[in-house]
Image 1 (cartoon, helix red, strand yellow):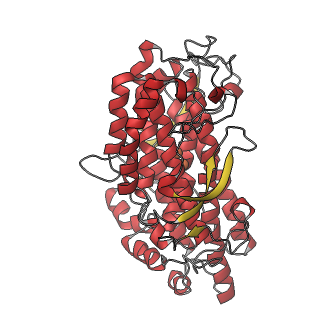
Image 2 (spheres, rainbow, N blue to C red; image 1 turned 90 degrees about the vertical axis):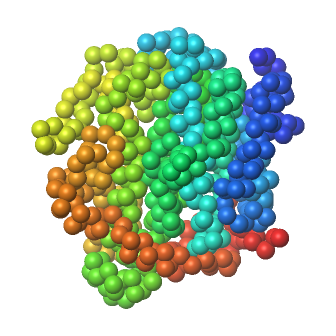
Image 3 (cartoon, helix red, strand yellow; image 1 turned 45 degrees about the horizontal axis):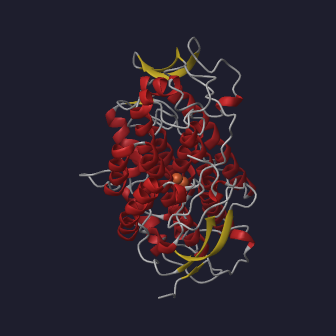
Length: 489
Ligand SMILES: [Fe+2]
Ligand SMILES: [Fe+2]
């Protein structure tokens, strides 16, 4: 395809087509037509499975208008169904190479290498499936938003996950012909949590029942998304790399919402405890009587969402991961910054395994241990945010720290799926697990308590009692800014 069209001016997004894009769709009649045909089904899906209500409200959203890192977004009031979902790829670097695996040193591929077609399609579909899934999981939350600010952030995330779906669907239509088209249709047919046609990955079929869950989800599960996108951004298949690099720009905000959301809940609880003179964070009934979420319940939510997100990394030892790497399709986190041969034919990596009834570290070939490595990088990334939460708790002088549970705790995939472990990594019998699990993951009663606090707070500049206001507004807006104009009929 020629690079001479206006849409190919670096960073420029072409709005002349129904689907805003910087990939020259105006000169690519086949793909433009395919996407235009997919579009009505997408809108039907959005109306049926996107945010419940508020579809006629004006929401103060950012829209990607360029791929220039300094000025890529424009803010303004938009009705969600009118959001300009577009196809945006990071700029092409003509000198880019395949940076790892058996084809290391070749020029990055602009087309799908025939022998890797099935693997690549699978990677695109798995990533693509998570995007609409999270929108479906979060669709009921608008009704209980603790503020207009939070409601706006939820809808921002939702429309951007919608755009990420568009990004993956573009790759399917452009590079995978007829089976790509079928997969693109399938992405609109599966439903989160539906036993007959579930989404592909476990964590994306779980409920997001309340706002604390949303914040935990965007902190832990969107961060898995970040790690997956980071390793796909290393891909030798250049269009995949460019797509994922731009998605990461948007993803950062989703994790910001998660980290600051949990932070604001923690701060509010600590503040209320201080004011009431409650020293013991485990005096749960007293803390709950203040109308805030007790710290042990916040810890349980973290345990749950962390463990569900770890499952997304797949088995610790995986020949699929080895094959994807060898083929140059999916690299490691920060691949090009790592100082080694980028072939991994003789390297080893330490993997936590369940051996002879014990949790042990075992050296495995680094190639098959790539999921474990990415998971380790993920855990480090999570820990950074948890440390910031703990600093905030400390500031209030409350004696409590949020901790990440052992990677053996509450797992459904990989080495530890058949055992029970406590958050501190002790092996447990079935009886012990059943006896203690309600003190480690949210019990139905915890769920009911949190649900009882989820009352809408939609007055400008007001926040629900259980959460602190944010430190700064979105796009520099003042505290009483009307982020969502609900009254629009
Ligand atoms: Fe996403
Ligand atoms: Fe996200």
